[in-house]
Image 1 (cartoon, protein in one colour):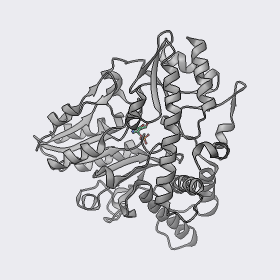
Image 2: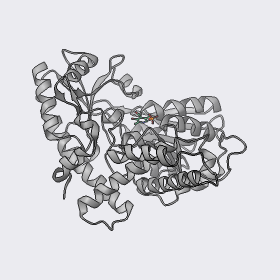
Image 3: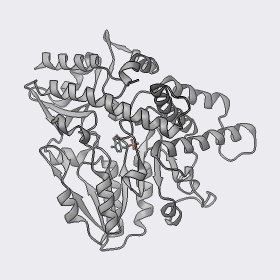
Length: 416
Ligand SMILES: Cc1ncc(COP(=O)(O)O)c(C=O)c1O
């Protein structure tokens, strides 16, 4: 079975998709800013509050039950990331806060003369924390530049920047602004050749394709559950030896063992319960698609994420092909369908007659939700000379349909 065969069933699981705006069915193309959630996630959050709302580590029933849910969430996320040690998965407020805290800790190991590499394609959350940490440590920041014509990373500038002095390379798995998939496997391999550590931002990648930490070969990886159909919870994974040896900023009574060493303060337990449900929604989808209820969670996730990637890829090329025939629209990023392996279903455009904000307002009035601005991918919009207005971002998710894409195109054609 494929996603197309299940699309009505999938959509019926997301209550928000039934919303009507100004008489139009809502079309959610705002996923890169946060996806909608299925009923099972809503139920898991609500069930946590109604049944076992308690702090961590108590010996009474609700605390024990709450801890069991948290433990299962750690296991679910190990399956989601393709790792096998639940203690190496940390939860936190969001990716940005986790990255700020972690970059502080990592930079305590840096000295003057050390170097850090960041990319101009990244969300600022995988850019500024490293730039500021480098400044504080007296380390130098180097950049991976862009090919402006298709917004892909210029790997020559990466190779030029990389040296024995490089301590860390921070790069995104995919661009939240233009959907480019970065060659992270190659970047991690080259970084390790000179002894540098690698930190990957998988926030935009997570809802669209299978994360495989082993295959990527990274040392650290961050993502956010609210971008993959879960609640507002951040996730950080790291290699055990690194997490154990690095000095964390933590309060004294907090454990020195993993994962508590890196999970400061009381967590968003209800959100973590919802994160577990989001991973189980995706693995459930894999089992339904295969008709095999005996698949392990990781096997089922591999199946569903590959099916999602295929479905979204078909949809995004329908969209890009149609956008290319609208004279007022300019597309940023890859527009050649033979390069489908290099892109996710997120496309950004500008319009010759309307500012990004006006275009988003016009589409919003017809129930079509898109983001405008720089989406915090500021190094990119600066490099493209698109500040301060930015672009309009159309982000597809597996709950979007061909009909919705058709409506968007029709509306844009009328505005041309
Ligand atoms: C690619 C990417 N990285 C990082 C972030 C920041 O994530 P969070 O909101 O969890 O801090 C976002 C959020 O939009 C993003 O799209």
